[in-house]
Image 1 (cartoon, rainbow, N blue to C red):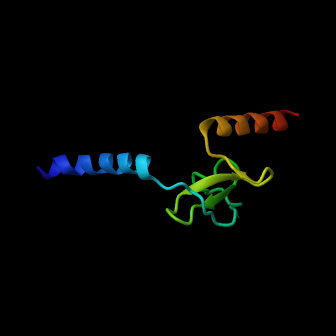
Image 2 (image 1 turned 60 degrees about the vertical axis):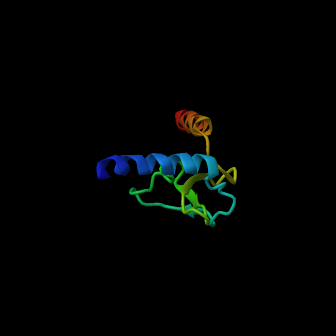
Image 3 (image 1 turned 180 degrees about the horizontal axis):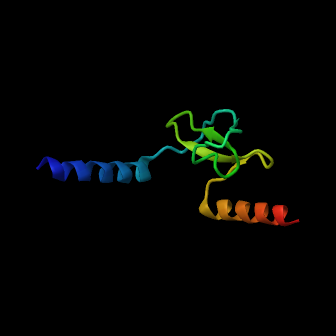
Length: 87
C-alpha cells in the first residue's frame, strides 16, 4: 500500500502546483554566472533570477531586461544567438 502512495503524492503535488502554483511575481536581482558549471536556468543566457516566494530559478535576458519564460522565447533567443555568431 505504501508504494502506491509514493507514486501518487508527486502527481497530486504537480496537479496542485498547476492549479494553485506560484505566479512568480517577486524576483531576486539578476545573477550572472561566469563559470562553466551553471544551473539549468542560467545555461541559456548565463543570467537568471530566483522567485522570492517559491525559490524557482528562471532564465533572464540581461540585455532586454526580461524573463525568458516560454519555450518559444527560448527557441527565439537561441536563433538570435546563432545569427549573431554566424555574422
